[in-house]
Length: 200
View 1 (cartoon, rainbow, N blue to C red):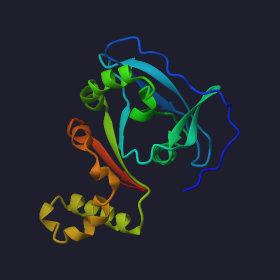
View 2 (view 1 turned 120 degrees about the vertical axis):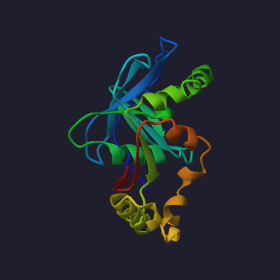
View 3 (view 1 turned 90 degrees about the horizontal axis):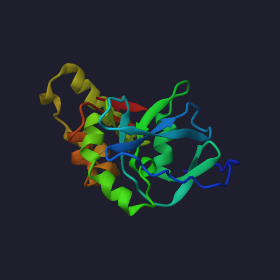
View 4 (view 1 turned 30 degrees about the vertical axis):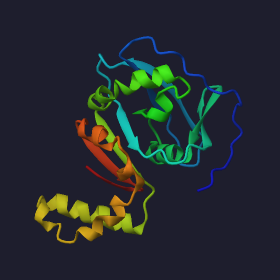
């Protein structure tokens, strides 16, 4: 997928050091349409305080930065998988609070990365919802998600008589990640999103 380069300020965003031992950053993602420039701001919050945010669980994919998110007069480079997720999860009319490791953690600071990894359990547990982003999907994943929804609506797991219908979902790279067990197991509630399809 190719992204159009927009005319954005060239100054690179620098994360401000976190002040508290239980502090994290959350992204306040500004509303917009899928093709609009990604914009938002990073807020420092404490895990010791109640805050409604959603934590994103997704596969990073390539580390190449192909898009940008604009923080006022500065920009931060992001990967294709991160950009696609943000553009599809962004609300058209309202702000959305998200925790995304590749943006909310200063990837240039080994000290901060190591410290934030130790907080991961609380990050996912404190989130009011964990969003599992599987990618854009296709006709096969659409049919698989529809199949799961039919099973969920009838509340009968014995209806999974043709598990091969789910193969398209399990082939998504999210299922190859080592962190997925922690990210979803520690969540209070989760939402699996694949393209325009979603299921609890």
